[in-house]
Length: 172
Image (tube, rainbow, N blue to C red; front, side, top):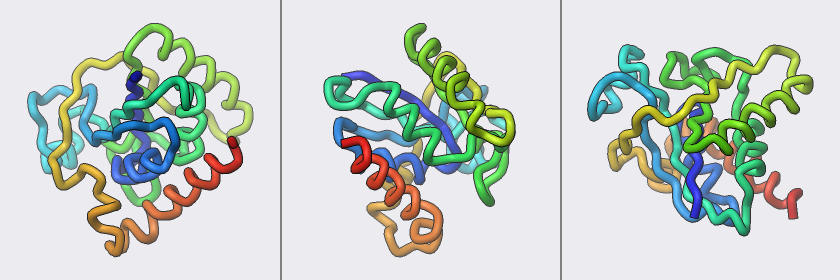
């Protein structure tokens, strides 16, 4: 099993969308690359801790590659908006790829260089090595499945889940 860590806005969206992908064995919502030990959601939301909301994805590389995960990650969010996704704003919502080794760093940078010409604005996604990571509170884990009727889930998360499922069908 391998791991990948991505941040692209609210972690509830990426969590739910990546859960429908074959080869993804686990998802954990968390906070990465900040300055406060053991941050809480309330602290991260102050936009003073330096943390990004991220998902840690455990995947079976024989079923899905890191490059395919990158492809889906960029499909699920707008990598050209700095510190915001939709109505969520603040550095905790920044577009970020946390790399776990030199190979991931190289693949992420190469992928961005390849796709950037397809965007009307510059991609602002940060590619950084893992500095630190803390698991988010339990109520954030698999939030969409626990709260499918909540309006944010219906209007923001569900369309991303549908997009991920359609993407997967096209890749078969």
